[in-house]
Length: 528
Image 1 (cartoon, rainbow, N blue to C red):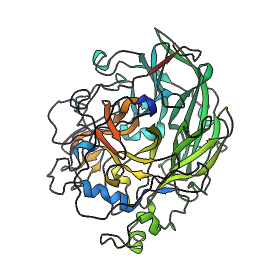
Image 2 (image 1 turned 90 degrees about the horizontal axis):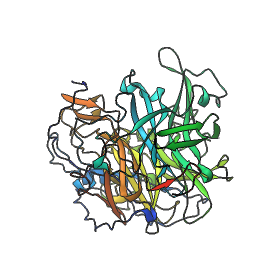
Image 3 (image 1 turned 90 degrees about the vertical axis):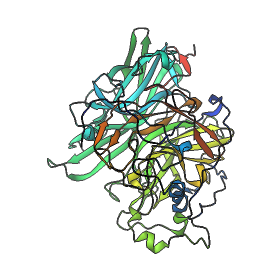
Image 4 (image 1 turned 120 degrees about the horizontal axis):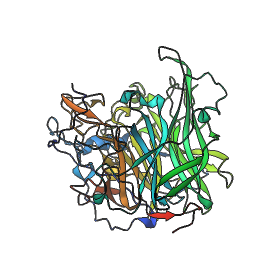
């Protein structure tokens, strides 16, 4: 096994994919009709109507096991060792190992988001593009970063085509957003062993004020790393300003934190119900069907105690008489009940966005997957597209699918969402061979495609562009770790289908770390 940082460009076997989504009128391309891939024998997906419900209604769409079984039906059972078994139209192009580092060795970089408005437009300020990223000191091992994560920011001049920028994207690391200790003040129990910041989103408001929504986290561990009590994640808000000119960017403010939401145990699982629960990744937006109302989606888990959770026939979702259907008893006895992810919804109660109320989840993935990370909405052609990311390793027993972006379409932000692409949900995945084990990012499987762990934490941008970070590229005998942003890719979307645009960039890979703004404002928030 090699974990050296050397960079070698060499052909990697098979596989392609792209991820990107379309944001309302920001999407200007016309997607060609997308042919459905051939399917292997297996269960049929659940029938979903896409019917919309009021945001406050008590209806939760289900990403069912029958839906997720389509992922294995999309996979080529004859794909050989180190080949991609998934459809090329849904596979991100393979990223080479000799990637540039956007931080020039200063920090590890992973989850990243731009400065946006309520409609998903991406902003530069006085000609400077600004992004926020989870970062950690490079003295830490890459896999130790999660409990030490902080939110940092980068900037670069706007309006320069990707092929005219430095290879690493041309970003300058501006430093951390928060001073030490600021984000720990909201926790009543100050005996935490680690206090960290996880993903969120950044909104530019009238007057140029920046509202940074993020996940504020406290860990309570002993010297051996064991939990003294469950960790405490909260959805939080901090407010500041961006000061930008041709010489660079400076942030002010961000010196106070408002505690917005804590998991309630009714809709969203708590640490008392499951010490390994998920509650994070706020993304705020305005629903086109309800102008003036601000909503938030976030990752959660269904509010059931870990050891007694049970799934239902509706969670399985098989059609009556399907010969490939599993029995409910079989699924509940398999350990699949430990995977009960959902996507939550909350509504702002004031214009300052400092008070929120929980609404029922808009999507559950009970007995399907444990993680529905970084959810976001994209609105196009009168449809609401819900995107999330998930790992191969978090699928429930009896299911399998690539690391990547999963998507659902409906007529509103609360709908009977239809999973994209043959009912599977897969919108954009890493090159993956489902005929072989995946291994782990720190120890990829010998037989797996080199791109299996190449990219994660995708964010869909205007124009169908998708950015992500590099995790691991290579196989057991030769791999490198990432910690910087991957090339941007582009996907087309039409109806309930997506496909990678291989005409974008070079073979479907655009600029490294390319996150372009489509609007520019001055420091007072006025469009320029």
